Amino acid sequence: MNASEEDGERDWASLLPELLNLIAKRPPREISDFVRFRAVCHAWRSSTPAADLPPQFPWILEKRKDPGDPNLKFYSPALDKIYTIPAPRSLDKNILSGPPSHGHMFTINAVPFRTHPWPPRAVSLLNPLTNHEIPLPACPYVPANFWIGLLQNQTGEYEIVCYVHSDSQHCVLAFCHPSHQNNWHKVELDPDIRFWRHFYFKGMLFSVDTCCTGVTKVTSTADGALVYVVPSPVESYSSRDTEEYGLVQDTVGNILRISSKYNSWKYDVYRLDVRSKNNSSPCWVKVSSIGDQAIFMDMKGGFVLRADESSGIKENTIYLLWSKWTGIRFPLNYWAAWVDIQKGWSQRLPCPFKEPVSWLLPNLHRF
Image (cartoon, rainbow, N blue to C red; front, top):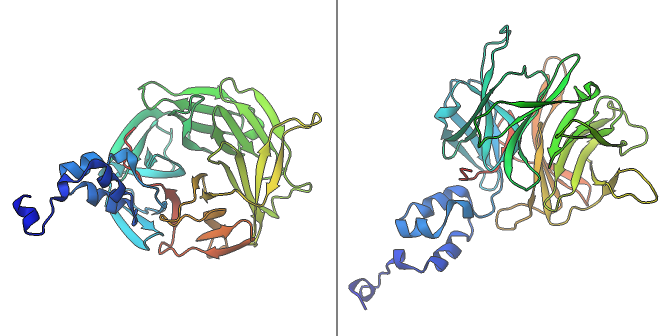
């Protein structure tokens, strides 16, 4: 027995790595606690790899009004806490909301309004927690109606960034690989979908007509060919009555669609059924449960996580960040809410930000 043990003290750095790893994963499981745990000593840090982060409740990003401000503000609903994080590499860049990509956000160089001709703009992936940035080739396309996201290819690797550009006559799907410093490659798409909402899942572009018909067209990103068309989930679709929140892919590969009636707090979830039964075409099937999963949606997209009691993620739930037009004098009203899918009721989610724009899944991932 050494002197420290005789005095009733323990050398915590000498604990077995297996025990340290178990301790690190016990509640509270906020990433800030995980970082502090790893900062204690070399032994604690080596026993808890950054990639082995416990399940996290996503944070809410506040809209930054000044690109010259190096600080980003996040709100943790799990702890009811605001984090102000210096992100110097986000200076003079606009943060693009969209599907979070291993804790990285998409940034694009800010340019003065009404600039003509529009210069190529530098795009990057930025992790605000580590200040790790992945530069991408400057994008030559004018962002008229764009969607950007870190995508998953056929092998399950996250490596493609997608950009949908449209004007009055063309619709172009452009993409590049973060691991290769090459140019953007483009695929011509059906110009009829140029102003639709776009979502990407494993080699397929899902384009939803949220203005008129509610139809979903599925296009191959390899050659721009139309794969199939999915009718609206409701017979008499009207954009005046229906508010579309978008599509997400759940943890087992199903494509889900979330919508609701205007001025209603009841939300409908549909699952895409592509299996042919009696020569029937693909269709949306309404579901009352998504099991032990939770959907996180914002204005540009969303993602699905497994429910986890210790992180506070409730099962069969939708967590929403959205904005509504409320009139000419007060055009936008931002709000956050969580929805119980099976019970059909919803509740406002406490949020101190006046303009919450997107979810961020905090991570220490560096690709």
